[in-house]
Length: 352
Image (spheres, rainbow, N blue to C red):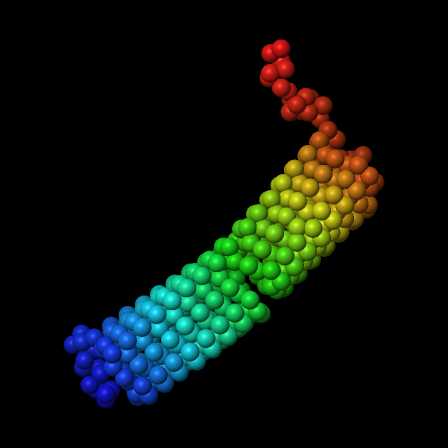
């Protein structure tokens, strides 16, 4: 089919069903709103074509050339896109549903507000892509390169990110929901406002990252590395994991309420006004830490080493401190007897 004939058919609203347009030359054609159904488009040339709001339903797009194409709000439903070239394509608001796109090239593409649902992009290249308000739902991103990409308000739900990389990327308020991030590296990245609720972060490397106002509530952080992070106002409530490394971290006013972090290393960390109420920290290292106004009420601090730590006005009300080393304890606030009596008051016993 000639480019002219195809443009006319699309302009007249004629759907293109069960046709073979493989290796066709349609670069820079005006094909906005085109409907392709069960059509073969293998190695077809759509470079810089206008395909805004086009629909590709059960099409074979293996090796298709779509670099620089306008695919704004396009729909790809149950399509094959193996080795597709989508570099610098405009995919703003596009929808991918149950597509197979291994080894696809999406470098420099605009994926703002796009949705990838149950699609496979294993081994694809997404270097320097824009992921503003993008949704990835049950997507497979095994061995995907996302280096130097920009993530803003992006949502990932139950995605497979095994061996994926995002070196030198910027992430702002990204939500990782039920996504396995064990062993991944976020070292040195800016992750302000990101959500890691109930995520598996065991052995994950956050060293040197900016984590301001992030949320790790309920996450598994077994042996995770948070050394030298900038994480003021960050939530670690009910996190769990032995052997975490928070050495030299800046955690002012962070919340570790009811966290279970045995043998954690907080040496030389800035924990000014940090909240550890009800936390389990047996055997933790707090050597040289700034603990001014920190709240440890009802926390387990047994065997804690707080040598050289500053405990001015730190709250130790009801805390367990068996075998703890706290040279500066004299400046801390010990258990308040009146408050302890009130907490232990039993109305049934009082009635008797």
